[in-house]
Length: 366
Image (tube, rainbow, N blue to C red; front, side, top):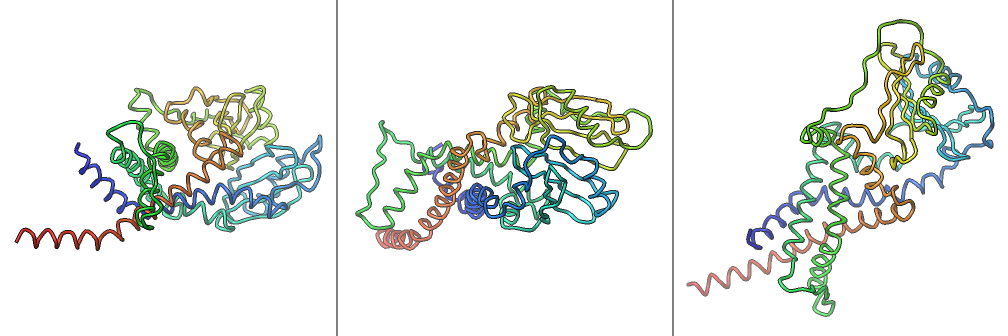
């Protein structure tokens, strides 16, 4: 494909998706910084008041108390502390929707937040287009794939005919020329890293991409097992949690997904040794009426589309590399926003120059 056509594609993809690109980059960078900052500014939500106790508050007593306040039909996802000194978080889906922060030693409430409360929630809604539901996720995924193509086309346009390439930037020939050099060379240097960040975001935003990968490789999706016939009340949560941990020795609980329905299996997400996902992707499915294990879906035995999530999620958020990885993700988000803004600005400022050149060419033709 001629380089001029690559340039045409690069320019008009950028103009079409530039707004989403800028918003995704800047909100992603802010999220990487806002989350630890939020924990520092609001320790009551995240730091337990009492030291860890050998006999922590029973999960069943916490569930009963939350059900009494938010309704017996409320679904509650428990997130036990990941580190010593953290609170236990209970995400409620009932008469009220949000997170209740609890002291794991005593069970006392330390605060609560609605789903849409706080700066981090607003940032995440913008970054993931959560307010548009599934349609928004599809838009974000489509834009992400288009932006990944933008990185590829930009790299092709930049690709030098002779090596090694020159990354010289002329800062003494005016602001427009300097901005052009920064945009061109900066985009080339960061193209691969930006494409990975954008593509992983698109993958995480829209589940069908993972399904397509699974089907393309000749596999079928791993789905929740069916609950065997039977009856009876739901067993205490502490018994269910112990049964899940016994099924995977050495694991820790990432999430316990409680639902009051007795016609569905209950899921406990575990983080087993070797799983890079910070929340764990191994799921133990239990019969809530007997605490019997129905199925165990280990993260490394899931279908390909779901299995890769264990790597792509922490890679996209930077958690795979700890504090350094999160800093890199923040810088890439800023770079993505800056490249989008500079590209649109360069196109806008060069329009008068092109019009003058076209007029001159027209006069010479006459």
